[in-house]
Amino acid sequence: LMMEIVYLPCIYRSTEILKPDYLATVDVDPKSPTYSQVIHRLPMPNLRDELHHSGWNACSSCFGDASKTRNRLILPSLISSRIYVVDVGTNPRAPKMQKMVEPVDLFWKCGLANPHTSHCLGSGQIMISCMGDPAGNGKGGFVLLDGETFEVLGNWEHPGEAAPFGYDFWYQPRHNVMISTEWGAPKALVNGFDPAHVKEGLYGSSLHVWDWTTHRKLQTLDLGEDGAIPLEVRFLHDPSATEGYVGCALKSTVFRFYKTPKGDWAAEKVISVPSKKVEGWMLPEMPGLITDILISLDDRFLYFSNWLHGDIRQYDITDRRNPRLVGQVFLGGSLVTDGPVKILEDPENQPQPRPRIIQGKRIPGSPQMLQLSLDGRRLYVTTSLFSGWDKQFYPDMIREGSVMMQIDVDTVNGGLSLNENFLVDFGKEPDGPALAHELRYPGGDCTSDIWL
Image (cartoon, rainbow, N blue to C red; front, side, top):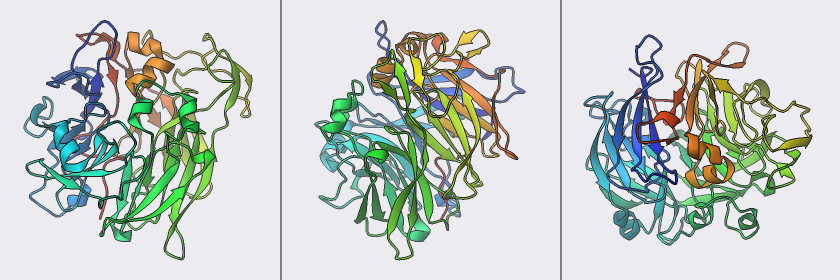
């Protein structure tokens, strides 16, 4: 089951249609007659939600509790601030809506809005990070839901201790720690990226370290200019590990964070993708813009996507402080040879990539969200980031829809190669082109499961 289907939140954002977002179920079984096809669509009951990331009602943190089953998918809406609970247990191939949490519950009970990342807790509760307050200002707090009724219980953090900005989080119970990241103020980023907003302090550059038991914020690690806009955060999967990695979008860097001998936490830059000097683009230099990272379940490989440059990279992280590039593949992006951008200077001396065509379809957009199979051999990728930014950087993807692709991974020596037999073209959806975002496996995956 875990490898037969995947779930993807999808949104419609074309200028011609106004349709509700929906949850797509995709068949990823190579032996199936409906392989690489959308086999079910569950529309949401409202408009303009912006489904983005998702999470489970139960995961490995509930191991040993026979009453807990991974049978509900939690779907926060980044713009409307609704939270949907979807029943994927009764019929995994045809999910159905179970409950909707209204924005007013987040506003009034928690003073929070713009929910992003969902994680189940060992207690049975569900915790969701938020990016803002109800007025669209930055506010990095956390909402708790009851794991049975899915009612809003209140804030996880103490009053007055929310971070300036919010985005992602990961906890490591054996070391009594949680680390959260920062994107920016929702009202600044909703309609696209304006570099002036960075200088105005509307985007974050810090990691926040929290005491997992007391819910107190212990430290703020300012990553500086090189660590601006730290997005996805990943601890190593080993529950005894005291380190992990975070991808920082603006300067295309990866920082390693770790527990020091003194018992506090620190961070160091371990990967840097150099910007390319270009002409024909909005700025004289184009960063890679790291937007998603993940770590294989065996903690050997780290993967990330450069959403502007158009490549996915694989690093061997056996030496935790010195990641080694072992795989790379280009799948579209802003630097294709027949596009308007010309590279004037590239510190990595790479040729401009050719457009990627799969099964006669030219790939619009660029690799963005990643999900790795549990055996580490299949890396799935979608191309939409966030509709306001999609519209700004890849308007062709708004017109033509996003895609889902699959990369074959060499798990022995490292290496990435495109599977030419797999393509889900969301430009051919029944109600028009759609933007597909994050992927989830029914049986668990590399970015949702936390072990106690």
